[in-house]
Image (cartoon, rainbow over all chains, first blue to last red; front, top):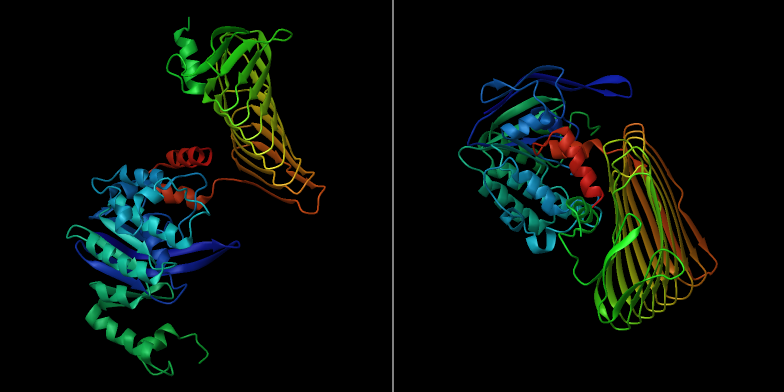
Length: 248
Length: 305
């Protein structure tokens, strides 16, 4: 459904071009759930932002259902069915939650305010609230996820959906992401959480801007788990990859 | 008799779709054209100056509309209105001015409101400004509101100018007595070569008096805005001034909030911010399928809501 082919991305930081992604090749199929994981700063969010058109790749192609959408803007990609829930959703002074959800419905063919209930927020209490500093980080994050569900895209990318969310809501969040997934949708979750890595069909490990490893949960997860349990953080292969720069 | 144009202007400024409910006075092109008083809400013309007196009896509840419309060019209209909200009354007052300038001359309305909110009374006051016209004649609105909030009274002011006014100089002054509360929301959008100045002076006169001044504005095109909200505490009052502006294109915004305490128990805070629309906000809305222009419009509309 969504493919990234030979993606290179450089971003300008303080007048210097910094390589962010190098030769990333990924194919996300319909009906499957994926997790992108890896160390902080490895390029996971950048992969998502290239897919969404927020970052334009320096070279390579983004294909959606076989069509080259590399030159399409963010809005066009969203209208075609790609959705992205931000890791740090921006706040909007004066804008009610209701308006945000309604804008998400605009190009959607399903869902209603039930999306707020699904994510543990009572519509009566939240629809008129404004998306400003009066809402906590966790509330803003849950509304962001509800917005993506309201948008009902075919490709749904959740960027660290668990960040800032309390434990109880996290359990609910996993159910919501799992239940919203269908045979005709592709779900990509950027996460470090074991429970999320456990629920997907395929895990992609991103490291230093490239795909370091990918495979089924069964193939990848034991290695990740083993590395996490390794007391000295030296002996296992995956740990060496993730913590290559660690002085220990 | 109201024309279709009159009705359109009334709808813009007061959301009216015909004769207003409750007591009202409609002023058109310098003259009062329709008026209705009710028991406990008397509206009468002033004898010594152009304008009206609105007298609300103690304990009375209700709605009063006093809109002004201008439909001629080369017209300057000046009114002095006095509004007296009796003790323990609860009134919603809708003022505002709509100008349709059909020519190339100026159409100007200067409205001076003197408002007394007596002890324990509650007033919600809305003033909306609107201007339109095809031939380039200026639409000018200069309102001055002087408000006296007595002991234990509450006044809420919503002052809105969204589009079409070429120049405005707005002056708002208030004195808040012990236990009185004032909340003021100002929302302003200017575009093209328009300019807007807003001077606010709120005096917290005694203990437990509070004020909150919230100003939100968007400056587009080559427009210029200037804000000078001042909050003075003579007694142990509490107040908060918040000025927030979105600046776009080649516009200019100047914001000078001032707080001034003459009592060691006073608590005053001011915040002021000027900035462009955040890139992440645009991206977020575009990721919902909105175009960049639609996203910008949605952000501005929410900001000024």
